[in-house]
Length: 141
Image 1 (cartoon, one colour):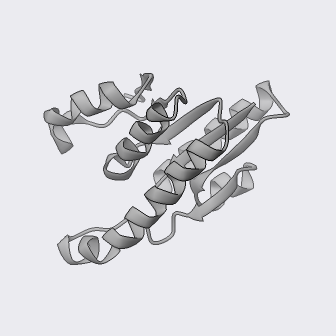
Image 2 (cartoon, rainbow, N blue to C red; image 1 turned 30 degrees about the vertical axis):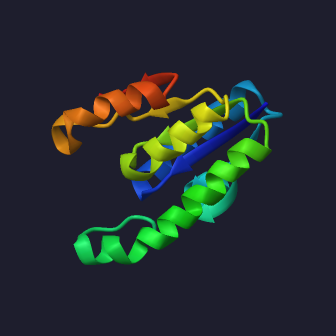
């Protein structure tokens, strides 16, 4: 079994590590690739990119990192087409992960979106995008 996990913030990295450990308990042979940080790496994920520098706050910082985010998204989507994953698990970070999830679905890979985005915080209009991008959604609250 092969899974791709994507976390763009330290809180998602910690949750991703918990998911990876739980998957490894049930299926020790599982291969986990993805985007994350030290916690996911320590849990056994092979990271194609480190989340350090992904999280940004503010317009200036966001504009400056947009090109890097788009490059990473393009690389990740290409990987999802090239490698046959059994599932993709994007964790929170909707600005990036909703696009990644849509790419996974387009590649025919099931998507479990973990940590459902809070609609009150980032807009109810994105609910339709989430419904189209995710095979299923796991909420923590």
